[in-house]
Image (cartoon, rainbow, N blue to C red; front, side, top):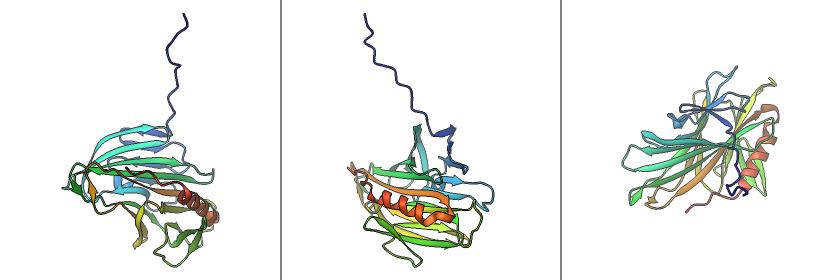
Length: 245
């Protein structure tokens, strides 16, 4: 008789290499890794010529937290955190590879939050820190990103780099909040470092409600930064918002 067993499917190959709680982006030309025990650092980028590590898409829960679960699936690294404060906040972070061309590497952090309390404070931030001398603020209108040297409260993305860079290996960094999700974006200097904070969620979260939001970060060549960063940020802004239930 012919077999009635379902056909076997091969497991999806993971883009991340797991070593304990350390997840390495195996396909990135710039050494990139996530230490799940240090969520605020997010994706750490290292390499030659970098004076201090760049950290992208870190999750700042505004409290001590503990890792309660994690797994890797295809292009995604999933981690579940619970805060140690009175908010009883349970947050799931999904760091995902984002489609980009061969000259750039992009990632997305999709963060969701819920609470066991009847009502709680869900505000958190997605934080990126790099050494940079130049900052461009991007506003998206008519499907295109327009770059400004002056800070703008309407900006949904920023482009960070080093002024006057002539090295063909130099890179710039894009950080973009989805305009349908983010509450506000702040940019501040801390010495040579530039700190970008994308603040998510409202101040109140009710039991049984799941909030979800996302932020994009990408690294690419400085020589063509405004073009590739503008294209990525515009496509990201035009994508449908993540459903909230």
